[in-house]
Amino acid sequence: MSHTTPELSEYTSHPPETIDAQEDALFLERLDTFMQKSLAEIQAFAERESRSYDETKRSIAEWHAKTLFSVAGNNAGDSLGATTPEERPAQVRNVLIETSKVLESLSEVLGVQSFILAVDPQNPHDGGFLGGSLVGREFYRGLRGGGTAGASSFKIYAQKRVPSTQEEVVMQDSSTHSSPAPPTVRPSRQVKVDLYETIRSQLRNVSGIRKAEMKWTNPERLSLYGVRLVGWPSDIPAANPSSLKANQNQRLLELVEHGELKFEKTMITGLEAPQPTDTQRNTPETTAEDFSWAYDAEGGGDASVGCSIGSATAVESLPTSSSSLLLETAGHPMLSSSSGHLPNEGIDSLGNELTWTEEVGDDLLEAQHNGVPGFDEYGFHIEPWNETMKFEDVEEDNPIEQRARKRARSSES
Image 1 (cartoon, rainbow, N blue to C red):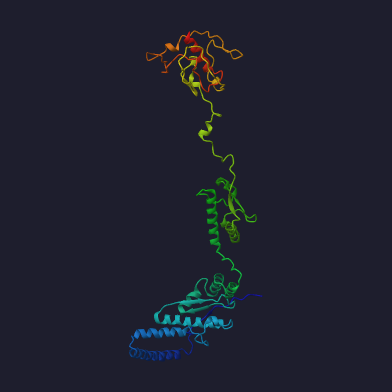
Image 2: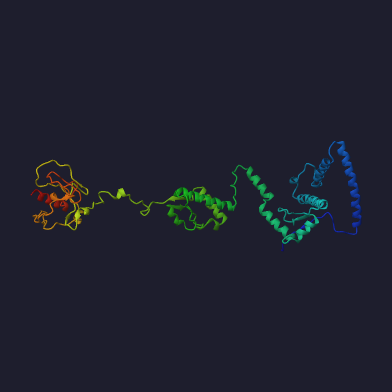
C-alpha cells in the first residue's frame, strides 16, 4: 500500500484570464466608481461627526479587517476552539483565504509582495496552504526545496516542535487528578550542562581543590585528588556526557541529585602521609651529637678542651685542692667513632687505664693566645681541673673524657 503525500493547495482571488476578462474589467470600473462615491459619503459622515477624514477612514479599515477574518456560518461570539473536528479544516481554510486576500490587496495597492505558507500538524490529510501575492507564490514554488516538498518538511518540523491538541488535553486531565504531576522534562542539552556543573561542584567541595576536574573516562585517577566516585551504574560506560545518550545523562543527573552518585574521601596512604618536621626528626632517641669537631686529627688529640664540649656541660665547681678528677659518665656510641687513642695510651680488656708514658710538651697551662697566658690558640680559657667538676650527659668510657683526665693529672704534677 503506497503512501500518497497530500498536495499543496494554492489560493488566488484572481483566476487566470478567460474569455470573461473584459467583463471583469468593466466590473472593476464600476467598483471603482462605487468606492469613490463611498469615499465621498465617508467624508460627509466624518464632517457630521466632527472627526477628521483620515481618522474615520482608519476606523472603517479596521472594521473591514475584522470582517475579513470572520468565519461564515458562525455567530459573533463563537471561536475556532469551539468547533468540532469535522468543522475545523473548513474554518481554518476560510481564515487562510481571507488572509491571502488581504496580502493580495496589499500587493495591488502598495506593491508589497508576500506569500503565506500554512500547515496543520494535527491533520494527516492536510498538504498545506499557499497564499499571498502572485509574485510571492511564484517565488516559493520556484524555490529550491519549496513547493509540496517544502510544505511537507515544514509540517514534519511543526509536529516535532508544537505539541498536539490531544497531548495538551492529556496534560490538562492529569493536572486535575490528585496524583502529583510528573517531573518537568528538561532538554537533553540542559541535562548535560547540569550534569557537568553538578559533578564538578561536588568534586571540588569534597576534595577541597578549587581546580579539580572530573575524570570521566578514567575515574580511578580521582585518587590524585584524594577522593573516589561511588554509585556509578554498571550499565553506563565511563565516558564524557557528550558521548552518552540523553537518557543516560538524565539517569546520572537523577542519581547525583538523590545522593546515590557521590564522591567520598579516600583513606590516607603512607605515600600521602605528611613528612615529619625538623623538630620531630631531631629527637634525643634518633639524633646523636657529632663531636668530631673536638678532635684534632693532625695533632692526635683535642683541638680544645673547655668547660663545655658538645652537649656535655660542666657544672659550676667549688674551689678545692687539686686531686684526681671524678667523672660521672654514661655510654655514648657516637663518640668512639669521632676520635682515637692518644699515643702511648691504652685500655686493657677490663676497661682500666694504662700508664701515661708520653711527655707533655705542649702544656695547656703554658699555652698563650696573643701573648696572654692561660688561653690556648683557639681563645679558650684554661683552668686546672677540679675533682668536683663533672660532665653531664657524657657516656661511660668517653675517649674525650679520658684524655681530659690524663691532661689534668699531668698539669698537677
